[in-house]
Amino acid sequence: MAYKIGETRDLGSCTACGNVIVIETDNGIFRPQRCGNPVKLRDEKWLCGSCIRKLRIRYPQEYRTDPAQHRMQPFERVSELSSEEAIRELPQMHACLEDLREKYGFHQAVFAVEQVDVKKGGFLKPPFITVTGHVIYGTFYSLDDVAVGLNGGQTARISCLFEPHSGKPASDQEISRMRNPLLIDYAWAEGGEETAFIFQDKNLKLNPGDYIVKD
Image: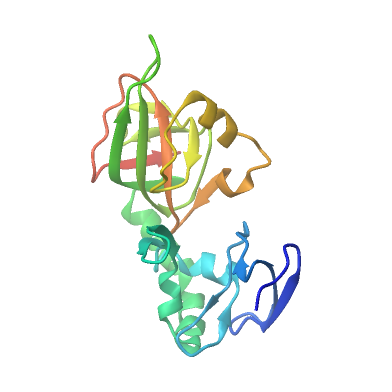
C-alpha cells in the first residue's frame, strides 16, 4: 500500500516509554525525522526515535549497502534488540555516557575518524576535507571549533555537516546549501550517529583512527 506525501500513520505506542508513534510516510517509506525514525525491534514491537537516540551510544548507527538501491543506507543496530533487551538497556545509558566521558577525557563531544577524503579547492582556495565517522558522544554542529586528538593539537572549524557516504561532490555551493538552517537533518549530529564533517583548511592533517573533540 502506498501512502500520500503528508499522510500520517499511527504505529501505536513505543514499547519502552509508551509515547504514541505517529510518522509521516512518503510513498510507503518513512520520511526522515530529526528526532529519529522509529524502528521495529526483533520481536516486532516498535521503539520511538527518542529512545533510539539514547541507545545509540552503545549501539551506534551504521551505513550498509542496500542491494535494491545500490547505495549506502543508515541502519539502526538497536533494531536487532528485543523489546525486553531495549527496556533493560535504557536505564543504563546515563552511566554508559559517564563512562565514555571519563574514557575520552571529559571533552564535551568526541568523534572517531574512520575515513578521510581530500578534494582540491578552487583557485587559491583550501582543499575540501570530508571526514566520515561516528560521534562517540555529545553533539557537533556546523561551524563548531574543534581540535584533533584527545590531548589537543591541531584546531579547525567544521565548515558543515554532510551526509556520510554521499555521492554529492564537495563544493562551495553545496556547503552553502548544507548550512541552510532549514535543512535541520544536517544541522547537528549526536552520540551514536554516523556522519561526515567537511573542513576547508590547507594545514589540517587527519587520518583514520584520529579523534576530533569539542570543548
